[in-house]
Length: 461
Image (cartoon, rainbow, N blue to C red; front, side):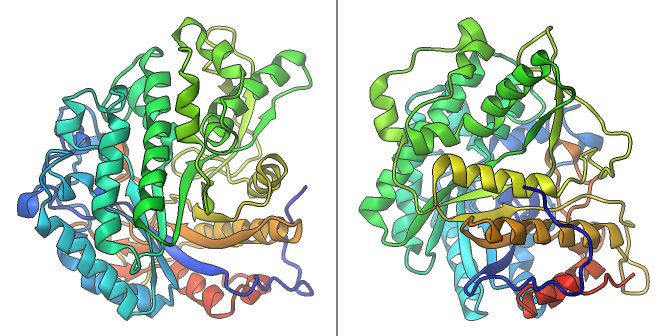
């Protein structure tokens, strides 16, 4: 199916009743004060403080100082009309050693945040894990240790008992593919390992941890829980059989490696071909733990990949840059049709499970300091408009999309890229911590207020 991204003044783009409009962040990227009030270090605290691992040596020590400015940030969400806020919890704020002793001050921080969101009519969507594993657990093998499933379930139970009811939408893991591809295969992200033998083990234990956390929620909670994956469509660079085979491998590696076990109870067969002797024979009983009933799946979408066969290493199918494409500051092609294609594929493959778009956004050049109280970001507005239109196309095709969380609410620490890339709809001056809603924030506020109808209006530039 092809997404319609051209302006059509006769077309109604109103979204279904109950569609949830919000924004997303992650704990380590915005909070700062990673060791405050009894918190333990995470692998990202350790990784960022290792020379040469992040751009310009940037760390999350201050970030957006959300740990102290959370109340003002919620007020800003309310002013923009957000109906939902997707955030993550720092595991090591809650359990400084990863297991055992609960740090009540850390738990209280998130409890106050949830109460403030609810007081402002903003629904919290809580993600248990957005990449910041406690360093104490990494010292015990991290996601390479099969005990990690039990560690994660214990952590989940602490939060379920404290917050369920006030929080009614829970997420276990955010983007397990990035955790293992970046953290265990290529070493670009924490914990910085480079091993094709470790990556499948970490992936499998992440999925076991997901299953254990869902099981724990079914015993403790009474609302909704799901999984968030980042997926992107793969298109062949040519009509050759080699490129078609490369697309199939790339699709299995990125798009099916986590959804298949979570929803179908098995891995795609291509993974054994991709990893060769590094792919273990996992116990059959593990899949009974992994394939838990889910209430929804969150999909994070940023770009597509045009794929060319690369005989040097099956994991490294070559991505081809399109000569006429528009690219973001992170080098990702702007391709909204891919989002429609993915959503339709998801429905065809996994059925009518509800979907939330839990991240979608773009880094474009924004000034370091807002001028005259305004930040003009027309490329971001155009990006968001086209992708929201693509979501509407998918809904029209029968996909059960329940909500949209723009990435990101605030400019923030872009992991190993430091503060060099700005994804926020709200500008952050990192020197003063002043927040300035960009033009995209004001535009998105109007989209929310009109329930999508203003998408068919001409752009304000």
